[in-house]
Image 1: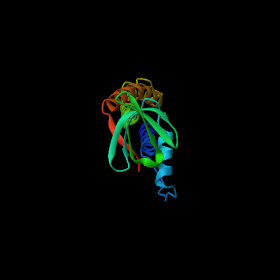
Image 2: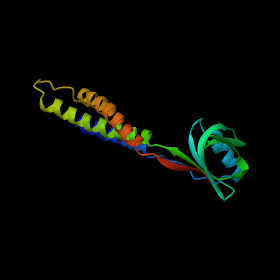
Image 3: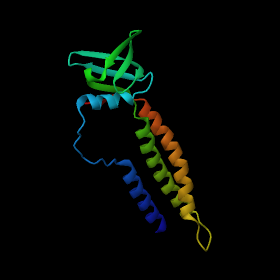
Image 4: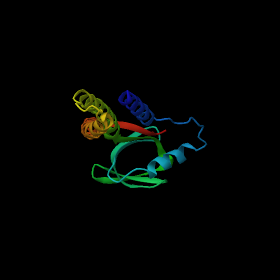
Length: 165
């Protein structure tokens, strides 16, 4: 019975960590300010697509990023784009973090429950066995294996994520 309660508590904790809770609030920033914040967060050599003033779509890798300007390497030559000219910004990214979290949670809870059940089923001691210890050993092993597997699966599927507007 303790094992069931432990599994329930662990599932509740994981569900709180997996689902992001964001508060809805009205932004008082202008479009150029939002673009400047997004540009400043870009890393070197990161692949991006930027729609400039509604007409051109530029795809390249970031050389330099600041709140007022981004310099992209496009076909071997640098191109300077001011933040005020950015209509939309898309970043090339993978889902390895989300995959690792989901894989680790599923693997950890699944293998932990199986390990606790095996400890309980094979217990020959009159005073009982430590089901909780078996659960945590299985949880740790399954979490690591599931996290690595989930991270690899998530990394295999790159996508474009919109950052601005």
